[in-house]
Length: 373
Image 1 (cartoon, rainbow, N blue to C red):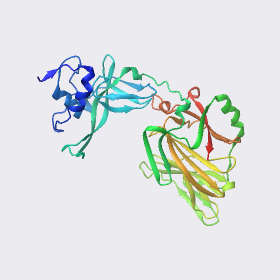
Image 2: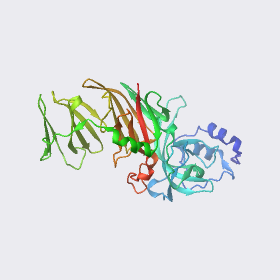
Image 3: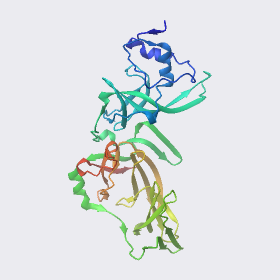
Image 4: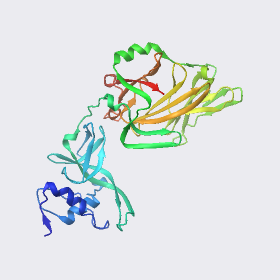
């Protein structure tokens, strides 16, 4: 027979077995209405499993946007059934574009990667990414993000970089070395604010003139020149100040889609170290932490350095998946008790629905970090 009804308990087995159709077969149409309670041909089922339900992105209407509200994330499936093939995972807070509203499922549009072993020899000959219709349970989504950090969220990594080794973690991995991170309340955060330590001082004689900053050092004059152009050559510099204990000047740079902070040695004029964001120096002058709210990946890039006399030695770099420091106001400071204090928000709530970053004080949470070496 060419068609049959699929009992739920054997649905996944059929999906796994029927995978021998050519990639060049007709792609499933977005207009097909799928009803698992009605007969479906084995050939069409295999086609869904292999090639997905391709859509024309430019000709598809988005009904609304929803967010993944399930803390453990949501699963996109090939068909609206819990037994259907899993094609993608979404993390808490991700935005989904709904193109079809069903009883218990949303059909959403997304770019899905598919790999094909055309010759059945274990070698992928075809690798395709295309827009498809996939299905997510409604109960895993909501119209707003109830984003609130828990203690177990704080040390979950997207990546870890140590020396030449760089490893990414698609499903996250807990960082159990280098740093201890804990949630605190706002009262403690504000109590510690007057104890903030900052080794930066300003030399008012160093100013920008006609878009050029000239910094005199014992070895040479170091210049930074602005290029206010509307392309990737854009660069704007600001003199931040000097850090006397390390014998360094500090300059910030803003570029087309990035920024940094550079320490310039006051003797040689050479760049001692480049940081991803402002370098916060520990009260004992042994460590530096630089934490950047990455708006593109929507997580925190954090760098940890060791200070040895005036040398700055990288220890590790990490991407923290679930929290991001707030940018305005810039509430990051190292206090005399040896902790770095930060006002943060859940990464899922960093951006507001209007496209601006979250600057609502009543949504902030507070953490503190201690170097654990």
